[in-house]
Length: 113
Image (cartoon, rainbow, N blue to C red; front, side, top):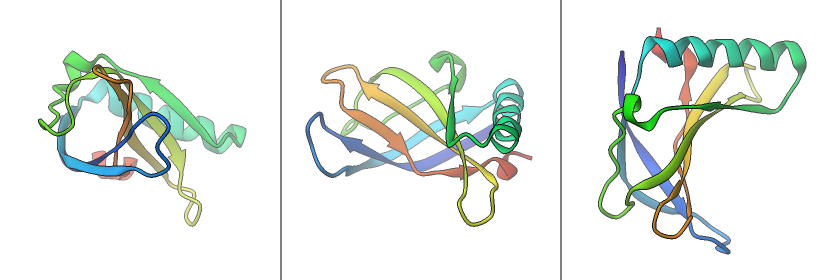
């Protein structure tokens, strides 16, 4: 199981830019690691831009900061880096209180090894 503490961002509905939120903490277990690798392979084979992996927020042990707030939903967005065609993912969700988009910085799937 891999634990991450990573910077997050919030983009309010109708806003043009995102603002930083304090660190997000979450875990990627073996099940999600396998799903991320499968998504990376599918992107390479099919030429898609990205894929979303649905997650159970309880198994992620997701913790957001007070300045962020509780998420109503959460997925992992998988895409290939433009330079190296390597799989990367980041957490994407919406705030429960106002539906603002919330996302983390990207993490390389290779780091899960």
